Length: 118
Image (cartoon, rainbow, N blue to C red; front, side, top):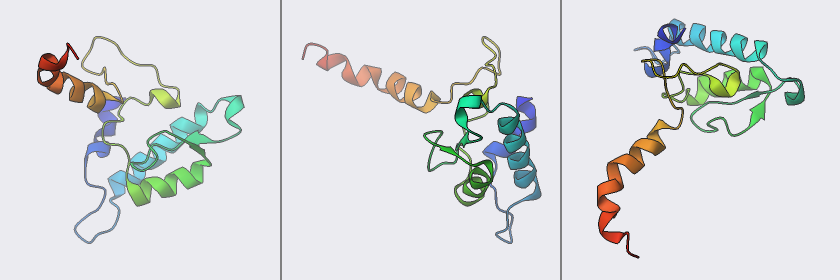
């Protein structure tokens, strides 16, 4: 299923500055998936994974769609685990939606070695 999500990392606009057909189809597939996996306690709302809200709040699916059109989807969110998808561990499909944070710490581990005594 992840291979069908190559739209996530691509530019959402075409040369004429309109949303691409591929992006719209991808957003629609995400919205369908998220709706199918809504939990009863979510009261019909899904997490908004646009670049601005980054899964931090719940919204009506139609509002999430508008936010995705306006702000774009988080480019690293290819495993929709905050929307009910199970993670595939150990394979090439294993992605952490917070990988950027992990990479930041890994990249700077050497920078902080001299300060461990503080």
